[in-house]
Picture (cartoon, rainbow, N blue to C red):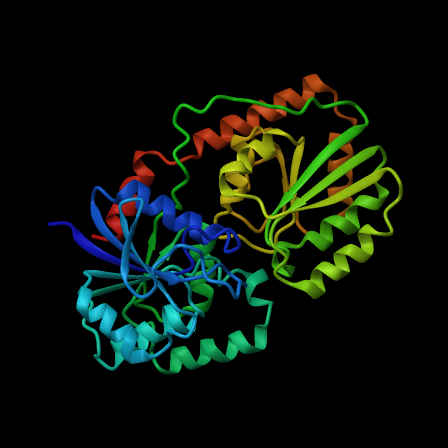
Length: 382
């Protein structure tokens, strides 16, 4: 009999706005459902949406892609209701996909502490919550919770799921008790088996088609990119995709966009469906992503598979781009280097660009899920 894994996800398919964690969970289920029986609890609506998904049943188990999913109402916060779901299912493993979420992480841990549930194994995946960039956002509030959590020993006996050496380091900085258990299991990517190199854009000297795909939020740092662009010489096109999560932040972005010189054209293209992401990367020359921190970055993997080189901050696990001839990793303090590397791509001819594009594709395929990564994920839940 397969072990039951109950995943508390916050958001799941068909979510578009919630970003990488949804893709992480989907990939995990796709690769491991022959080994384990997955059950997923998620909200009945997308991130930052007041409207439930159409055509779904709430508060009952339904089957999505051979996996049992329960979509719960936004108001579903009663500790007794959560306790009832967990105890009826009696999972072997409880998999929590946040450190700070009240409903999907704190509540279950409180239930375990007061012995209202008896799940033998609890795994917490911080999903980048402990990166320096993420902690700097609402730092005071997060610092108070961290202190409170430690005083209650709320996470004393959990297993921490780290997806990279960088995230392990971040966990060690925050979770300081000596006997903690940290299990390194890299994020699983989509199955790219059989995909062929394809590029729809044709790079021209003096022109550059830039793409940005992410949530419009301070952590993703679009504003930084916009401040870098005005001094670039050449014909620049920037297409921005992603949900506007922070209206005030987007207003700041628009203010800069409206002051751009005539050689820079910017278009906000709205939210992009998951199935169209790689195609959009194939349609552009370069992906620029000065993020404050990613514990993995599925969007980076998809860019590479789309043959789209990346200019990236040094706050992700993808710190091999330059040595792989697939782009650049640049500390955010080095604004001039961002400018020079973007200018390098503007001035690049088609032959040199093709070398970088093919290198990006090869790196993306090499770093996509293989048997050793799948085995690590299987062992995480044993």
